[in-house]
Length: 355
Image 1 (tube, rainbow, N blue to C red):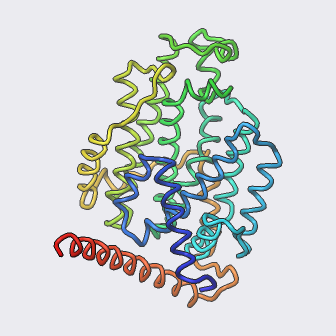
Image 2: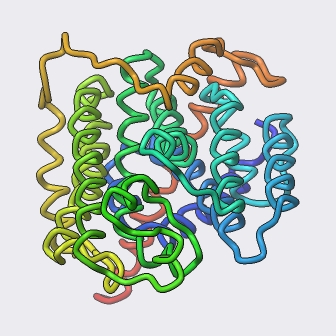
Image 3: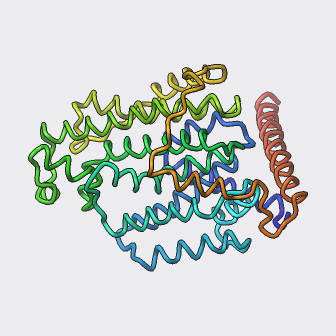
């Protein structure tokens, strides 16, 4: 490897802290992943979180997005910026043959955010969701070693469902930041002038029907995405099912709040997350549907699947196949070494208490 094990471990630890602070739901689900998947997934998420924060900043501009694209170019050229998340992601995209089109589409979604885009129809909203969330589902699928189009489609759909849930939960928060993600034609169908509502966002009965409609679409995608979970490696299924259950539960919390996502914010309690994590363990052996049923991928995510299909299974990115496999072995060895160090630290502290 070009970088020392100590450098990668330090970068990875910084990525863990980013994930812990950035998304409690994602962090909870990720803890169930096997270490061979959890570490690269953590690096991926940390980069997504940092770039999302940059694009979401009040002073984000077209130049901010251009700088993100330059950072991504440097990552794929093997010369990442001196940032832990960038260095870690450079290792991951090389090791798992992640096509550049996927993170580039993610950045495009962030660019749409900086433009304060609105979405006329639900299909247009899915075009946005495919970029900011479907891309993450596809990249996670690759990290888990799955490149089949049907499995990729279900992974992207899980990303779409999660993003729709986030939008339903954050209606009020987004409005306070001058943003509307809900389809504008839905507002009109409920007799609401979306732009006037944005000037003074208030919860009302027509808005609750819009939120309910969005959650119904999300639930449909969650159900469809679940088909692909049994196609994943058996030890990855509980974590992905946990993510699915925890995010879907945000919708149930919203329903308990009478679909008011303007005055309050729906939160899944720690106790409830633990219950859902327990339920997710059954995903190891579960078959979620008739395997012969493989619904066609939605138009909004097809370009992500096509990008993976045209990418060779082994892309060298300046290295040899041997170096690629060595990286994975080294990563697993470092994970085991960290576990042993943690166990020794616990043993030393215990010995100190009884001596």
